[in-house]
Amino acid sequence: MNSFSFTSIKNLFDYTHEKNKEIHIIFSNYKNIIEIGKNATPNMVLCSTSGEFTNHGFSENAITGFSCRSDIADVIELFHTPSKGYLKLKNAAKKISGNPNSFVLLLCDGMSQKEEMILASLFCIDDNSKIIGGSAGDSLEFKETYIYIGKRRVFSAAIFFRMEQRTILVKENIYKPTGKYLNVSSCNYSARTVNSFNDLPATVEFANLLGVNQDDLPNHFMDHPIGQRIGSELFIASPQKVNEDNSITFYRRIRSSVQMELLQPEDPFASLKNTMKTITFKPSFIFSIHCVLRSLKFKQSDLWSRYSSDLLELTKNQCGFISYGEQYYKHHLNQTMVLLAVE
Image (cartoon, rainbow, N blue to C red):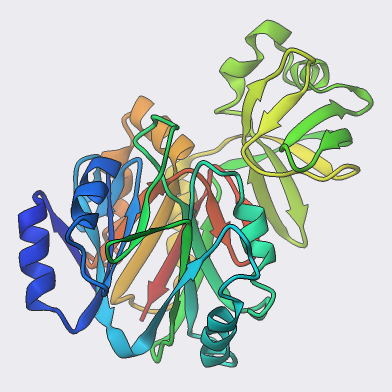
């Protein structure tokens, strides 16, 4: 797998025409993706972003991605109706079954709030199979995101990679528990809205635990998402907005009666150091997906340059994108980096 990074659409097409026997997974802002889609060839998969990670680090105006042999990858279109196209999905899943190095790259529509539905439809994929995914972005306009297979715009896509080299899938949090708990008393699961925590209106209890004024609560959301423990792992849910009825809408679904933990920031470079330690081989390629809220925090604190430099120490052959949500195995989560390394 080989990463690439270009500043012009012409340079991208010069590259893909030269390597027309390979599959190219391409990430850029939605204006570039729409333009590229007009002349895309069937061996190109396109996804719009809210920023890119390239072999030079973080960018907001790059055209990046990676190429690989066509004989190791199957590109599957995913539909609004999960049952449609299921046979192709099932056949692709069979090809990776039993191979611990294979993985699925999931590219989801970033505005439909259907990520959990998409993950639930992947029941033909073994729960232990690696899934790394990101929800497409639109440069923070929050209107419409774009995914293409060739010239054809699609709802979402899954690319199944049959790998011979070892692979590792890593999830990185830059938030840690505060020891304060929020029990979900009432929620609207499909709307991603929590009505009450600990039997109190959601905004009231959230503000109480933070020790802040209720009117000021949204200003603390970026530094204080909440987390759900599943086994030994912590999965982050980011608050999106406060509603007039004192409920809170999140960027992922939260079930009733679940115990959530209030989180606080920790040193992102210490987190990255731990992430790098989990990669037990020298990687030849790395693909990473970074939550847009993490990216905004890094931009506000001027951390992207150092973070990019540290991550690129693993290998210069890297690419990735800034997403509106992340998928890790069969979980949808927020404010997280997910990373796949190939030996």
